[in-house]
Amino acid sequence: YNFLIQARKTYRNILFIGALPYNLGRVREYWRDPVWYKYFIDFFNNVDIFAIIDYVAKDYYSLIIKKPIVYFPTFYPFEYAKKYFINRVDKKKIIFIAGDTKRLDTVWGMHIAKEIQKKFPEYLIQIINPGKINIKPLDGANFEILTYMDWETFLKIVGRSYIVINMDTWWTNGRVPADCAVVGTPCIGVNANRQLELFPGLSCEDISGTKKAIDLGCQLIENDIFYEKIQIEAFNRLKYYSYENSVQQFKKLIDLYYQGQINKWTNPEWLNKGVSR
Image (cartoon, rainbow, N blue to C red; front, side, top):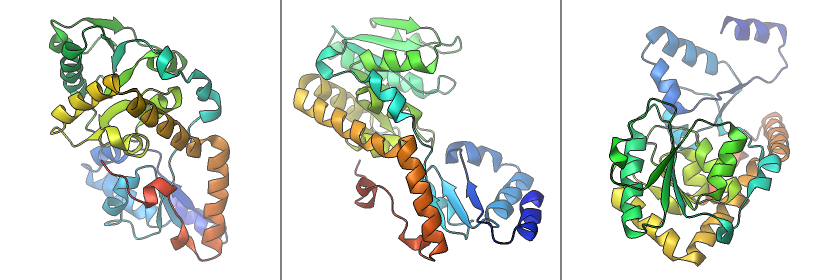
């Protein structure tokens, strides 16, 4: 904060954009500390633009930040990762359970995957276990545990899977849905920004979406047309967050500010129309 104030005095004509690279779920953990909370408010109320990666949290932030707030998510390495896209007919009969293994949401995902497997027993359940995960909920299921892997390997694993279950109820940016979109694997989930952006038709309400998640999994297996529509829509939307397009959007943001038209900043077309769950 002191650096920002001093910089403003030294460079009076520079545009200061306060970019917050963390999701609201993580930020709120720090707000338990009143000193950190005040530091946060003081800092971002002294920038010219407050850029966030949580578009659903804009109203939340507007309660404490009085500067222009814009949704500007982290770019996705689309140009590189798109080579891992796999067509539906080439995928394996695998239900992959994703999510932060340090949280209990994976337990919920396990139960949902098991219910889908009961109806389609030929589908194998896979999950990553870094060594601290409770796999007791998978008792009686046909499942396989994978060891922790690098991102490139993760893309290959998710790409060959037929469905991903990602029932993470923590406010998050949603890297898993983005990875699923680029490799063409439908992701059933809740809450995450990119889940709602990329897979709105596969998004459930918090903790009350169990039946819907199971029904969606079965529908994806039974309905090829539904599957491919979801697959292609998510892939095309993710293109918007490629590095090159993000650079162009950043330039547009700066131009609008200097033109005094920051209020004309718009989200992607599908968000302007509203995202339905």
